[in-house]
Image 1 (cartoon, rainbow, N blue to C red):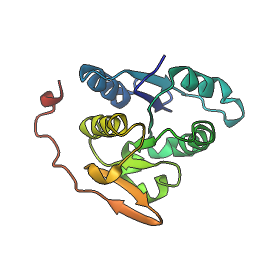
Image 2: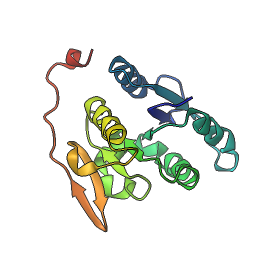
Image 3: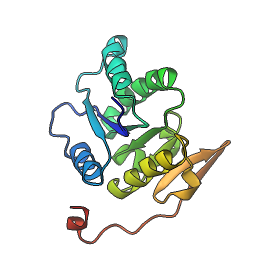
Image 4: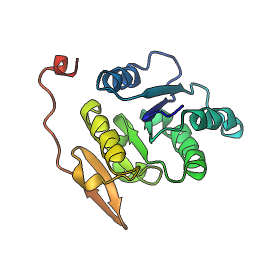
Length: 165
C-alpha cells in the first residue's frame, strides 16, 4: 500500500477531532490518508507503530500534538526519522504553532495555525517534487534552511470553515 500521508495523534482518547478533520479534508481532495492513534505511547515498544507506518509507505508523516503530548511525539518522531530518513516529517497543532523553533528539532516543517489547506499544500509539494519537500514555496509554515529558522507568509484564517467541506 502507498499512502500520501499518515497522520499521527497522541491524544489519550479517540476524540482527536483535529486529526480526523485533516484526514477527511485530505481524502475529499483525493489524497490517500491514514491515521495512527498512539494514546499510550511507550518508547520501548514502538516497533509495531513503526512497522504499521512502513506498511503504509507514506510520502509524508504528520504529527499533531498539544503541549502535554510533545514529549511522546518528539520521542516517536526520533524513531520515525531513524527508520524513514527520506520521508518529510510535519508537525502541527497548538504546541507546534506556539514554539515552532523547538519543534523543528524533530520535524522538517511546522504548520502554524489552521492545518487543512497548509497540509494539503505540503503533500502536493512533496508529490510534485519527487518526494522532496520545498518549504519556501508554502504559506503558514516554519522550516530550517541550514541553521536559519524561516517563517513563511501567514495566510489569513478562514472566515467560514464550511469552505473546507
